[in-house]
Image (cartoon, rainbow, N blue to C red):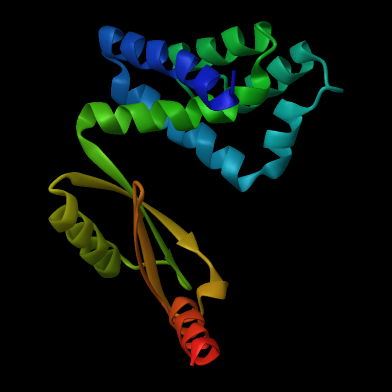
Length: 179
């Protein structure tokens, strides 16, 4: 079974339990913190996936990083997953939880790729654009990628709007090759 499917099997009951206990928003913030740290620190991801580091040592590291900073429910899922020797999928569980949360709240996930970090005004314009396309509120993720040269790329589910300079150059190159 793929890691994504296994991760969803942990994320779904976590979401349901958080709803039942009335700590859904707190758990969402905890998972955003965890996923954000994993994305910033590849060392944290590598530590969780390492077959060399003992499971209890990983739990000890997670405790030092997160105990007292995340809710009891979030920390307990960390403990459960590590004790079942599944800590390698913990990052995927966090991402799956956030995706399920967005579905429950009726939010659509969109990713904007550009050469610079978006300011508040530009971010609001992208959110408005995505909302007009989908009719749903937006959970917008930013990606800074200098290789796009200029312009932007928006990905909404399996749809993509590519207005980057690099894609326009590729199109132009193809036209010259086919001419």
